[in-house]
Length: 176
Image (tube, rainbow, N blue to C red; front, side, top):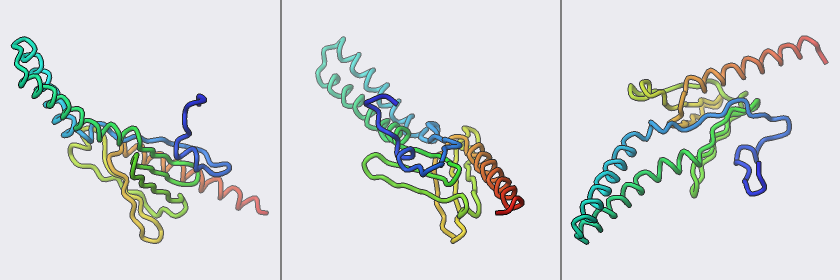
């Protein structure tokens, strides 16, 4: 990390001997409709600005620039969400941080997770994104939405828990 880079939220809350074992991302494809709307506005805006530039029509130039601005505004929320979201599985817990201005943080100990459910729509299956639902031993449910490769997330979670249980079993056999 360079001198001007800030530590991520996840790295700043890691405990002693806690290591990141899997890092997930938000799927850009999960924002498909917003990308399409933004692209339409950008195309219309660019077309209007080009036509207006050759025809010297100020109203069309303003309209073209306004449509370009709308395209930028529509593309901003997915970009901010993808850049500000952190999703990790450590050797002790699952940590998810969402939001730039208003922040939501989910932390659940691996020992307190009863099950992990993957939910995918047809489009999510085709484009490989979906939601993860963590169900705690106390019945708490935490949803982590729009994850890229949710089945890989679940597989990594299961591998980490299996290794953790195997290690605990070996320590139990050795005794105190």
